[in-house]
Length: 437
Ligand SMILES: [Zn+2]
Image (cartoon, rainbow, N blue to C red; front, side, top):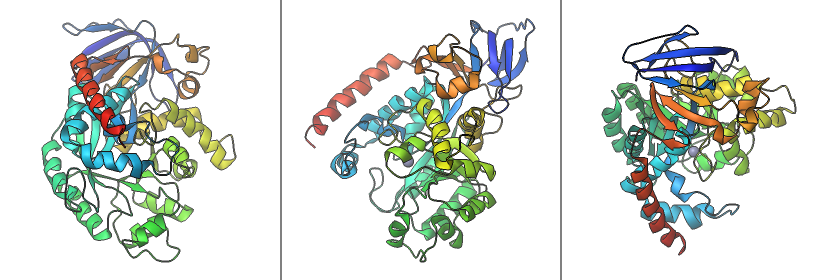
């Protein structure tokens, strides 16, 4: 939690893209206490030589299902991939042990690629919390609540009881927060959403949900609730008075200008999932319009079935490119704005104060980037390079809360070799089952 990093350049804030050259950073108790080109000396504090490389703010994966990492790649391009592969596997094999090991695998993939915080939604979410603790990662644990029997809750909406326990368990944690995670607008009825919001208020928890993800979401909702003819999903939620302020809504593809005004009224935080949206043939979210309206935007991979990779490497470049395609305008969103979504926007989205920028008084969550990486050369426009051309190999080391948690592509804050063996055994067991599907 205390470290002195010398001989680095620093990208202090993505939005203003200012680089502080040849400087040192002193971290005390997980907080950046001093950034100075002077020769800082602090007795008893370990020193890390940055080798003249570039320190950038930690990134946030704003919406994911990390424990689906062990199902990655199955049934790509098939309409029946969920019913053929995923639902049978989830029903029979998603256990506490699988969620823990698969979360380790998914979270480490983020961590070694500069993602310092995440927002997860899955079953047995306490196990995701244990995996994050083992790796030393910051994040939000979203316990799924859904209207059918789930791997961790045999009765419908059984996740609600689990959520109450988890909210209590994680309420005072240094790095992890809890979220009630109603699965989606079409799988959770309004009276349950109201109950969730009451409990989230009581326990000071977050709320996260899939919203306006599908073109046919109106039909899906009409199967469980009383959505009116021609009513948008957001208008439906507003009429039922179930939009909790500062909730994290993933996707938000099918939203009108009036919907965006409602989202702004409730300070909704948007987790933008461009690759998952594109790969699922769903659409391109109006992220430029939502940003112009003043909404807080974070970037996300979604789960590894939808987004495959859990690093934000591709997500940042897709966000940049697809905003232009959606608006048919090359000026829609600058590289600095995209990197802002991935960093400060993500911390704001998780309601974590003083995160996502490298400034005195801010949380010491950052990554060291190899300035000689092929995608960082030439380095006239480092922010553009980070968003559009930098390679995955560029991440030399990552710190969370002032603790070095990954270096040279490997987690370093745990016995990763041991975990790898356990994960590999789980994959071997699963592969036998998968071949029979
Ligand atoms: Zn999702």
